[in-house]
Amino acid sequence: MVLLDYIKGLDKEQLEGFAKSCKTSVGQLKQVAYGNRRASAALAIDIDRSTSGSVPCEVLRPDIDWNYLRSKPEAA
Image 1 (cartoon, rainbow, N blue to C red):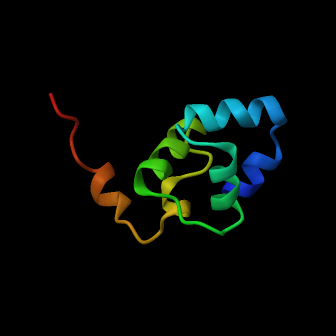
Image 2: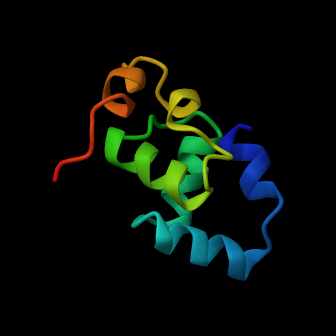
């Protein structure tokens, strides 16, 4: 799923909560969703986590090798 489709399904309160969980603003989310700005790697990760993978970071930032990062074993 792309970010725009995800945020279109949210009402105003849900969108504000989603932005807060992603540590950003509603305006920034909309800029990324409409393609006016590129998500930082950190924001892409936060969106992926906050959507439980519905909007994967691979979709937001296809230029980053997420497979490499995902295959790293957890630090003890």
